[in-house]
Image 1: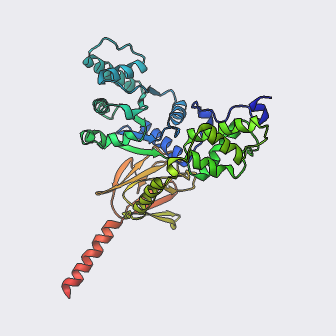
Image 2: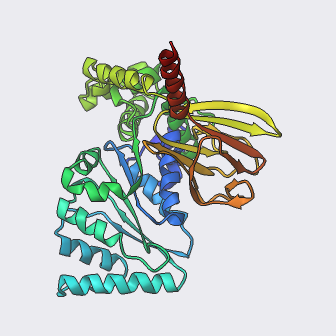
Image 3: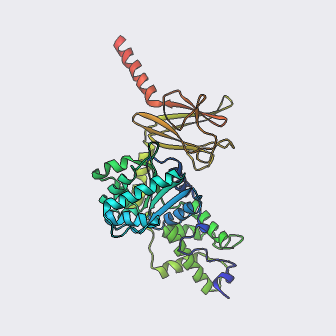
Length: 407
């Protein structure tokens, strides 16, 4: 009897090769995909997606590409240890050209003409650079210049950079300040927590044909998280090895002994995320988040009644029908990711994320608009009332000063 027959499986559930059919949509992966999708409609700026090795970036990219329609032309460059000229050649090759033995100025002209031609034909062009942490600063600067190619109406090249956490460090370089200013959205895919990890394992078993998903005993999950750190690729390696150990002993399910046998066979120690250092770093991050000063107040209304209120520090807030949003509105009139609110030192900007029913201020539909405290944003039958808490704080301080002066 084979491994699959023994466990009543149709496919190997924990293989390491990327397969979109096995992709589990954690909140993080759903958010990262939503950001990538936004590049199709919002052409002005980069999207940067980072994640640890084995976090599922490549599978996520494959899923994103598989859903693009015929109006989208795309190129994926994965070999990134290149000179600027070699990079341009790689991009043009992906678009179907034979760009070798040409000067850089000729390459740029070929790409520019191609992009304008695609725009004239109603096509949108997306460039995805995987393993972008290996790009040199010269190539990153070349990419920034490419992003500036435009018609009289809009940019014609949409760019997604995907890579390991080192990419974040590279982008912090002072010499890349101009490029960073062009980054519209940035998201980091972290490890899965216990709940997501259990659902991830159950999902892969279900896709593999196991029904019901009772192949791993309840006590195994703590060990899997402890030794994998919640990294999908490590989860796959550990679970697959544990299945082999259980199969060798002719067991019907995987128990704690099989997990520990797999750990011994792999010669693993507890994942670094479970060491004291990482716990301290997590505590510091949690304290920093808790101490973040709220600057944006959003009141959600429907039918004239308040449904919810939210406060947020500076940063990005997504509003939509999907539960992974910061502001979740369960309504058929609201798109999955309907709009975003971006607050900074100057206030807050609302931006439509290509929603079906649009974003309105009064009777006027807006795509991107800098809000003033008290503005009411309409989406479907719901309203968002915006207040800048810094305005109220400044007014309170002025009153206090005036009161002290009178005394």
